[in-house]
Length: 534
Image 1 (cartoon, rainbow, N blue to C red):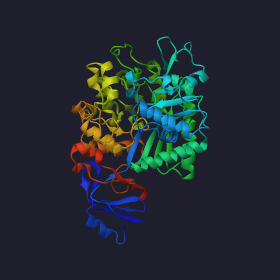
Image 2: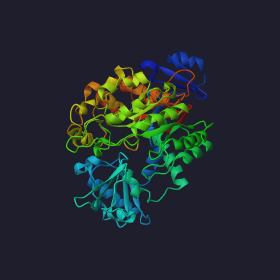
Image 3: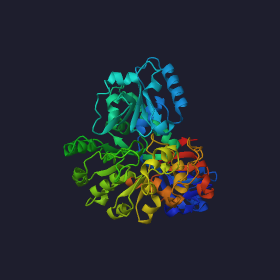
Image 4: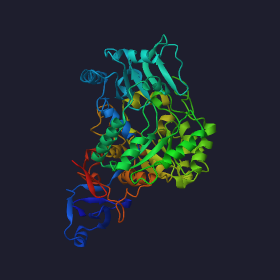
């Protein structure tokens, strides 16, 4: 089949916009003037861009689609905000599912609660145990019944990698942070293989609707009560059900050491030869998040003290990373606090840049560490959507970081100025999976107009505006940059590449910067075949 994409603009390498693209048998055959391409292919089919922009399919370099699909099928709080809305959704879900032993799901936002903390009593109207994962997946909100079933009392100690939030008398209050989530989460009903297959299929459909044609699943393994997704991906890839191009980042068990490397090698081998799925990355979560003070910092948090958690002993981390690097694994770090970022960078000293290591999130980077990314050949994996003023930032983060640390957050422009390679992702379902919304934030450092946080008093005040990126750089990060991290042949519109493409209904380069968020994906193609038509 031959298709001519015409009637708009085309985003090509370097940000130059061409007129048209010719696709033949799923591969980009030519890019250039419309009249010239039309002469090359008499009898072609046509896709009218309608004045919009044709981009490479977006590649999400840090997402959790299977978990997102499971949550969308449960008590999903992700698209609403506020205690009243949450309780109404829980009440409706419980009424609609009277035979479910547990009410589980997630997506609640810390900023909806004073001090960022809900309470078990707010869920005690439900006659069954409730387990709801926080939007960031670093905490869970449970009711009294769930704590009772788990045997969690005032005498239960905090696990080494987590914390049980408590009332003044020591009674668990109903919030379980980090590793403490497993105290209850492992008791929740396990999804069946059919549930996991359905979750992946639903997630893929949703991502296709947003122009995302590939991703890196940032945790493939058992974590925070979730089951290992590797069998799900292997089944989907072997059967042909998986159409996106996916890399699985195999979970590094922080309670173990080098003894797990052989298992990781075997897990990687299980995906060899598959066209749509590979498992050559390993995910190490080095710290938590700032809002619950588990992000690893160099200096104590203001007001509350403490410097967060390094989940993997920094003294051993370099040895672990060196061994993974020796076996040709890509290492994919979660690092939020500036100490965790430094520990990750230190561990990459002496590693092979050809393995395409990257660090995700990068909320806080101590300025002297910014040049080290390019020097070490380490890619910055940006979650652009987070770099705004919103309640979680202004009320639960800035007061506890203080200066100058608050001004070190999401330093995109500084990283770029030092020659850092970028990729980008959403961390979905932690946040919205729509790449266009993330592009808006990268360019403006303000909340997109459609966000649930857009009405926050300072949401349209640019957050550290000197760290803005231009649109072409941000778009390249979310396409070519992320495809490079995944070793995907897609991500760029040029001759010989797979025709993984997204059609935006308008050209964001022609819009006022404040309106970038209004662009929507109209069509998505994988190998030249339409997988979404809006």
